[in-house]
Length: 280
Image 1: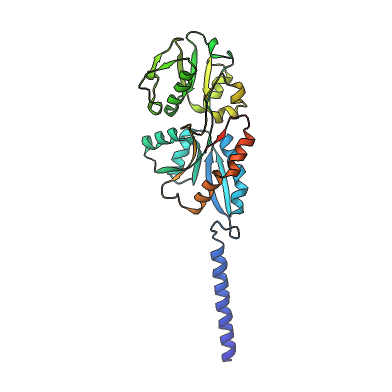
Image 2: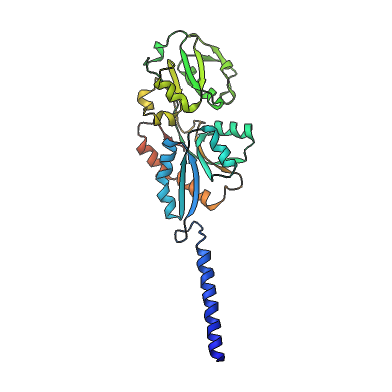
């Protein structure tokens, strides 16, 4: 009887230990043998979500389930991240990120530079800057972080002349020193730039690379003026996370995947026309 009691007790302890072991293994730790750990990332459609779709199976092999939420309002992404509703976002370049943090006090940081999208000016009525008419309307983004970029492109194209003390990161339309064509600048929300192009609302429309791609435009073929972009371009698109999560294993895994040689090659192969180039 005593032996039977001891045996039953021993079996009970084994069952309890086995149950605890199974329970702990189901929490997941990024290990492929565990339950997948979810990573929620908000991104714009193309190229950001497309690049994330490429890394999804890479992360799955490491035990992570990447959930991609596609959004199009630039001013929603960082608030969602700061509020803890997503783990990361991938849509913005560094000047825009810096402006958002300064304006809103977001406690977020960028952990990986992934790619650059050359910015272009598009038109349904002209094919070169020489054809610009006097008093032409130029449609630009109302995103102040883009002003310096837009004006720099027009200056390099010889359309306007900027002041000597021009600061690309703190630019306004008042930085234009000479405007020989008397161009009129009209601002719209970034996501409405392609609509302005479709409706022929201006002689030139400055369109962000990702929105141009979504509209079926080929920057290297369709742009009247195209920004010269290389690895030194300050407008690198970055992966952004909340401060304090930079060393979370799932964030490290995501950042490493996006910075990998495989992703760089994917970008080069997928956007062979140069509309997107990998950051170095």
